[in-house]
Length: 77
Image (cartoon, rainbow, N blue to C red; front, side, top):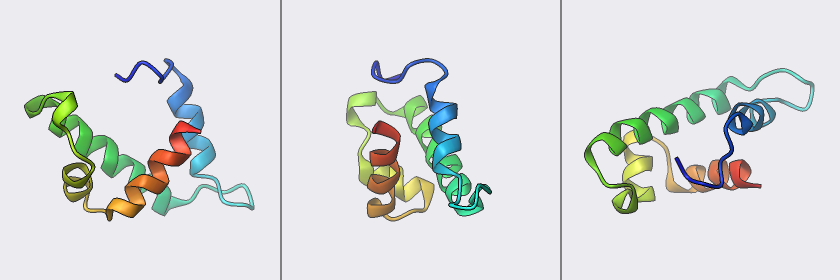
């Protein structure tokens, strides 16, 4: 896993991302994050980490590249 991600910090970031302004969880965001996670897990089994592209990750997750960048930007803040 990328060295900037600390063990245990991703669940708290995901929780913050999936919350609506009224405090409920946004199912669309949950599904998108799950799709990205699953696509990455599939790719890492067959592709070197350095060779994984945003385009391929987005394609496998069935999301737009812009959506990936929005989610990734939120996770890395």
